[in-house]
Amino acid sequence: MKIIMIRHIVFKIILFLCIIISTFYKSQKIIIRGIARDTTKDYRSVRIVVNDTLKKHMEFLKEMKGKRKKWREKNSYTKLLENAELYTNVDKNGNYEIKAKLSDTLYFYSSRHFTQKYEVVDIIKHKIKVELKPERCSYKVDCEQSKPANYYIFVAKKISVNMQDDPYYCDIIPLSAEYKSVYKIEQQIYGHYPKDTISFSTYDHYGSPRFSKYNTVLLFVGESCGKLYHESDQYFDVYKTKDGKWASPGDPYKFDKASKKKSIKAQYIEFDNSLKIDTLNNDPFRPNEQEYEPPYYKIKSRKAIPLMGTYVDDLVKLKIEIINERYKNFKLE
Image (cartoon, rainbow, N blue to C red; front, side, top):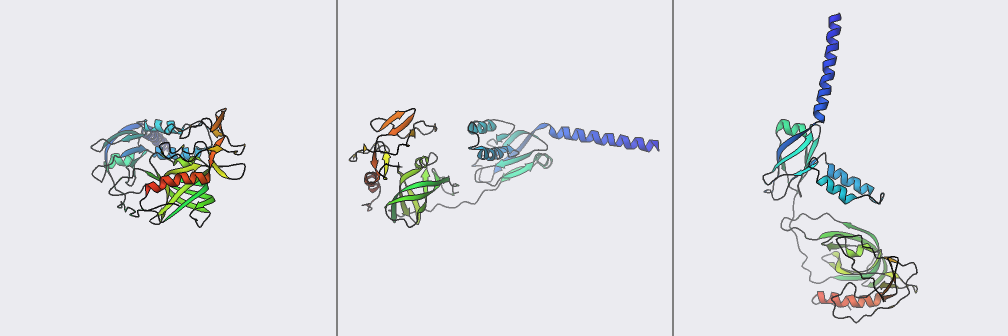
């Protein structure tokens, strides 16, 4: 009886030690080497991430945005990219090497390919060679309409401006990102759009469209091939004046410095007393597009107080000249 009890105790001790050793072993990081390729003749690099860390971090940043003003989201993401124990790329032959625990999962990414994930244990045991399958592409169909079917000019207040997923074309790589903009129309000026809310597309090389930084803008939108498009670079930030009209402060040619025809002149306008424009630029990639200088503005504590500007009717005349030069056989009157 005593021998049976002793054997039982010894068995429990051995089992306990095995669990401890196994847990310790699984918690230790080892070097994993393998092969990962896309299946489009290796045109695109494959990235390996431990436990989907980058995606989870980006989701965390989105959740934190606006909650903590001092959150350094760009720096924190860059540090993760520099961490060789969380992220790596394959070499030109598809080989990779990364440190991970046996309990970890490796995620394999490549642009325009379906993500795959494998547990480290399975990669080692089955000597898995990863081959990512591509998404389905389509061929771009250009709009051959030489001039807009309809054209709308209006003052509108921003509801939302959101970047769209890039289309996956078989034959080209888009150089500009598409943004879907939704605005509430405050005043119709040219071409009567049938609704009080308008949705249109904007294409930009450098990020969010410049006009999206302002709450209320004078916009120029054309309709081609059944879709509404913002006229590239044509807009004004506008504000209410004391006499209830819309006007844009500053030089009327502030966005068209190269214009040779400068027939429109700014005038002294009384804007709402609360209008004070922050002159600080928080975007290192885009310098301030406006110059807050006299006689158009008075600067006080880094705030620009507008003194001169141009009413919407004159701004439209200015822009119509520019837009008419862009199209053949098309004139805005």
